[in-house]
Amino acid sequence: NNAEMSKWDILVIKEPHINFLCNMSANYHWHIIYPSQHLTHSQQKTRAITLISIKLDMNSWKQITFPSSDMVVIQLSDLYGHCTLFNIYNDSNHHNTLTTL
Image 1 (tube, rainbow, N blue to C red):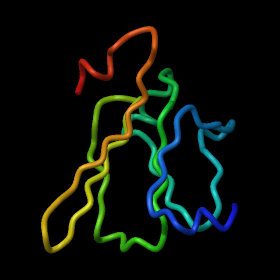
Image 2: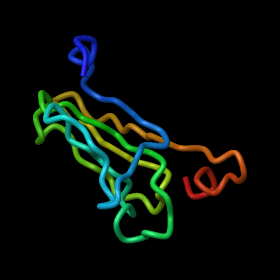
Image 3: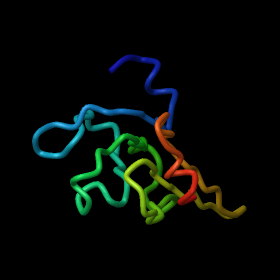
């Protein structure tokens, strides 16, 4: 919600506030990307969220399914190839996400 936000195309958020509808609030400038298991594994708390600017062409990125509520995987593509981004929440009590990775 400030002028600096317009400088970024991708933001990663750890421990987001999830409301009673199982959603995070963001303004209309962002696509909210939840972990693949966000709605299917409701007993697992979502602890990683990725925001992608609406300025990025939706045909230039896609979410990659990953079996964890602590990770969002995005793949960006263009004429030169692919770049895969991993937004990982590392729990200090265990290393389950790293083991799954």
